[in-house]
Length: 315
Image 1 (cartoon, one colour):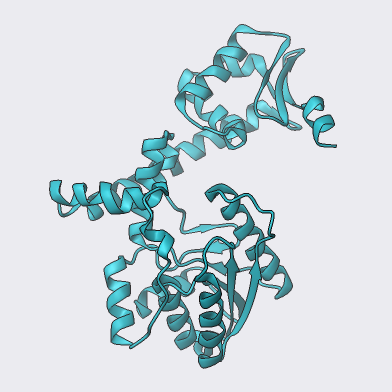
Image 2 (image 1 turned 180 degrees about the vertical axis):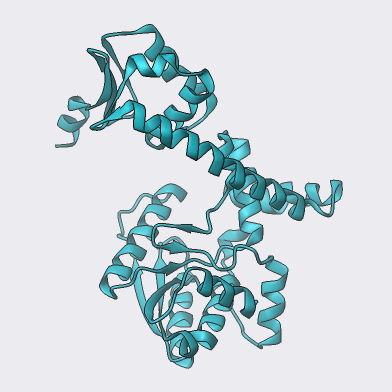
């Protein structure tokens, strides 16, 4: 595992810099913290453990104490923050608050690197979740190894190897009780669906991993074609309707998945088709994208306009 992380540091030329580690006190982030601590002198890394308390669980206070002790025992810095009392308790809101916290810590320590301890099993669970929820082929690429300032050095490491590493290093860790609650969709996948996969094919993890790798390669080809098309059709945050409708259906759908998809609550074939049909059938109209935006067609241009009613109701 140490070699895996070191190869990762070399691949992205990460050295002589502060690194923020999203720390949960669980096994994955503890393992990554230990490894980074062993490599910090060689690569001149300043490690900051960033723990975010969502305020959902009573044991979170124990996790805060664990984080402080872990940092002290390993001569690392730590930064702890709790979510506002009035925060909506949903997985989506929790994720947004957590990433906002990581961004804040990275800015405060002038770091361009936030490490997250997602592992290979997390990657598989994410793919299954996306397939069930509905996704495009890009969703089959699952969790990216790198996105913006976020890096995942353990993405090619299985959970069982992480637990073995911790045992060999006599490192204890905290267990999040909410990980056992199947009312959370990812827990349901991990605890009840994936064991069925195991019965069907014990090699399902490596097979699904191959699917992810193949999808990543395919995405690179599609992105090349899409980038060329975008240069032909996009102008100042709007695109040309006539050039759009002359393109193939597959290219139109891929373009819309890129242009409109990130702003949709559900990015799936049905919704992408809805917007394509709208563009093909209208020359001067608009359609709702989400609560804040409309997609408008006017004088052969297609662009976003703000939903004034939404602004008024929130202003």
